[in-house]
Length: 87
Length: 161
Image 1 (cartoon, chains in turn green, yellow):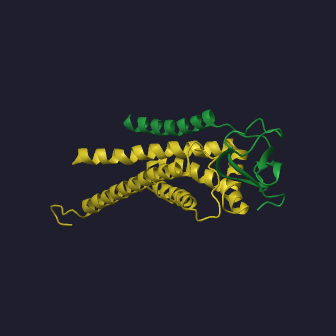
Image 2 (cartoon, rainbow over the protein chains, first blue to last red):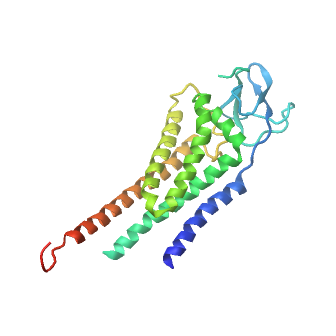
Image 3 (cartoon, rainbow over the protein chains, first blue to last red):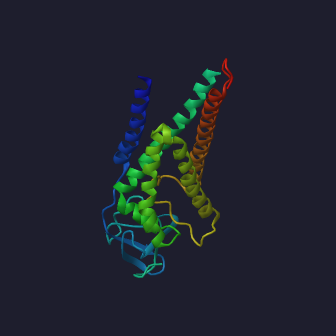
């Protein structure tokens, strides 16, 4: 009985982790985003590409609109445009 | 003595629960937010080809370790794998903080994005610590069990060994 309870408990902990991930994950689906490079201005980039990077800073890095009114969640940092060829 | 043994076995059990919770959460999170995870990895200081590999390897390893830690027969290896994985994460965070690379990427878009780099380092060190302690206790328990079996096999009976 104790053995079965432990097995259930372990499975429960695993399931809890998965459930918490479903509860707290905010998937980013937008592909085209904008950021403002301090030297060359606003640039359109593809999310997750090598066209840009976000360096540590307290400013907003990426926006979901060209007018830079809608910040993209979880993208704080200094936007640096690297160009179409990336790094 | 038996009471002490029972209590000692509870420690790796509880530690394994914490690690299972962490790895299950982070693995599922990465799969659910594939684009966000990809963006976060591409933003790191290592090359993009490495990020492409890690994009699949890391959540896969986390899921595997979570399963291994759930199964007592594989728990020791699960703890060992956790030490390796958490050690790699911790080492990378430590190197970023020291400024060894030419830039410090933002800690955004990651699984635990609410944390700063130093906070992330402490968080990783905690889980690295419990992985290490859990591994040591499991390894010693197995060694004691094997020693017990060895002694039982070689115990002199009324007619000798």
